[in-house]
Length: 309
Image 1 (spheres, rainbow, N blue to C red):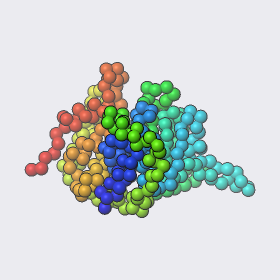
Image 2: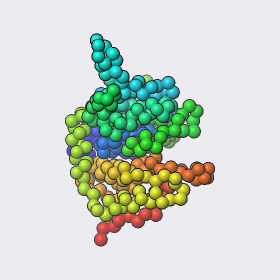
Image 3: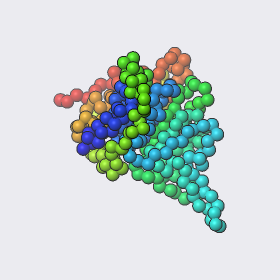
Image 4: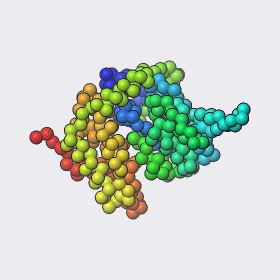
């Protein structure tokens, strides 16, 4: 059932994005694992188009916020308005099934933090009153590399709320030629429709939680994440939330492959997009040109993988 739902979404997104099956599969796995997605890449690589395609495919209510330096927290979560002798809460655009936070790192850290409670607990608190968000609730945020003009670095607490950080990447020559032909007259997203429903998505999430993982693989996850806290090139290692995230995405990837059990390859496939944004490189390591993705990839090579005896 999970594989059927996932492949309907993947095939639908393939109509819009050329040659991005793997990044789309990881994004779908993140959604099935109940998490939020951060898409980071250079402008024009298809981040927003991937987010819109996923939202349309899921068939959930959809809102988009263009994050800018003058955006205020209330513009995201909503505000209380005095009306007829009492304060009435006016919900913000965050009250949607899928929220596209476009160019999230162009807003100030204060506005970025407005998403924290919503992403962690599925609710918004305003004026001492808690307002639940729709279920399912998914944040798909896009950001440009922090080296570009007019961007703010996302705080560590905010980054840790994103289950996966994905890079869409530039297309190959043949993929770009195919894209030009496909978009010559009309854009496929104009005719893109939903291929699943909220109830089906919630059921798929429940089935993902029941995918089995051996104690040996649980120890492998804990060892891998624990090693990030001991590396000299890192000033901040991954938290226990990272272990839970790796377990969840590993289960979702297993389900996408039609299995009800996790294998080491599922965890290795998920490790870099799950862990790289949750660690901080020391200044001297950054100056040497080292990247967090390379550190995690090196760990995957060094930490022994459990084998069946």
